Image 1 (tube, rainbow, N blue to C red):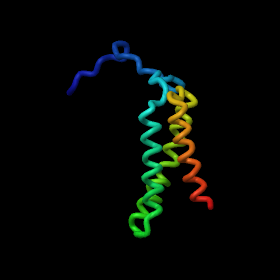
Image 2: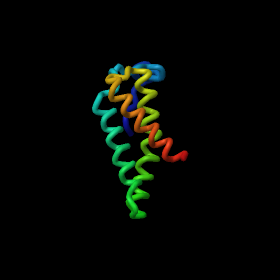
Image 3: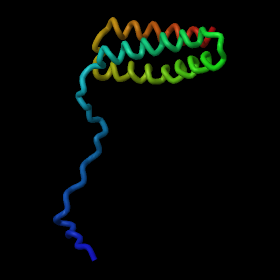
Image 4: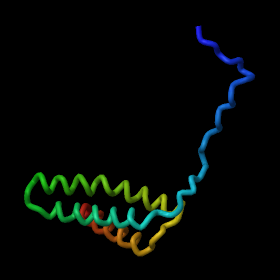
Length: 102
């Protein structure tokens, strides 16, 4: 039978990390540019006439919308980093949402 240390010798459990900021810093420029590039690729794919390619573009754009919104939330909490890159990403998101709505 394995030996179990008495309760008084056990380490205390760590408290929850809720509300703890990781301090990773602002959103990196490459993250913004990667999102923008992915939006452009998705928009190009949706413009194609082949059904499978068009569907792949729509799928990509649908997945990018919540990721981009989450990135903007993180940017407001930790810092935007590059405002220019964030604006390009916001423009790509706006074009995508307008494409889906109209």
